[in-house]
Amino acid sequence: MTNVLPLQRPKKPPEQNEDEQARAKRLAAKYRDASASDIIKMAVHEEFIDRIAMVSSFGAESAVLLKLVADIEPNIPVVFLETGKHFAQTLSYRNNLATALGLTNIVNVTPKEQEIEAEDPRGDLWRSDTDACCSLRKVRPLDHALEGFDAWFTGRKQFHGGARLRLPVVEWSGQHFKVNPIADWDREKVTQFAADHDLPAHPLVAQGFPSIGCWPCTHPVAEGDDVRAGRWRGQAKTECGIHSRS
Ligand code: SF4
Image (cartoon, rainbow, N blue to C red; front, side):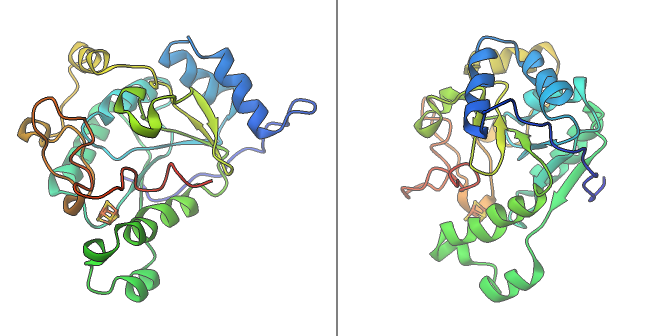
C-alpha cells in the first residue's frame, strides 16, 4: 500500500469561453444517460488524464464503484481518509478489498500531527464539535491530498436523499470537478451489481450498518430507515463536509 501521490500531467486546456462551471454542466448533460463505465472512461481517458483520483471510505457500498474503476484503471490513486476513528473492520476491509480488486495505489491520508496536538489532543473533539472534528480529520486532509488533481470520483447516489437527490454526473465544487458515475443507481442496482460480481461485503453491514463512517458517529439503523440515518444520529449534521464546501 503506497502513501505517495503521483505527478500529474498538465491540465487539459479549456474549450473557448468555457469556465469550470460550464464545463461541468456540459459534461453532466452529455453523460447523463451514459453507463457508469463510460463515465469513468471519459474521466480517466479523455477529460482528466492522470489528473483524477478516487476518494473512498471503504464503507458499506464502496465496493461497487471501486470495482468499476479498478476494471478500467487499477493504478488510479484511491484516497482513504485515515481519520484515526475508523472501525477496525473498515481497515481490514480496505486491505482485503484493494487486494481482491487489484487496486495498486491506495493512499492513506492522515491529519497533520501538529493540528491534532493543537485542536484535539485528547482525541474526543467529536463529543463536543463534530464539524470541527470532521474539518480536522477529513476536510483539510482531503484538500491537501487533492492538490494537483483536477477531479475526483465519488460514489454518492441520489437515492441517499438530502442534498444528494439531484446529484449530477459531473459537478464543479469551486476547487475540483467531482465525477459521480453511479449517481442514478438505486439500492437494487447496487445490490445486484455486488451480487453479480461476488463483491465482498463490509463486515458491519450484516450487523445493521447500511452506511459506515467513523465509529463515534455511526450507528446501526432499523429496517426501512434511511440509509444514512445512523450517521451523526441526533444531530442536524448529515454530511462530513467534504462534499459541502466550495
Ligand atoms: S465522522 Fe465523527 S469522528 Fe469522524 S471526523 Fe467526523 S466528527 Fe470526527
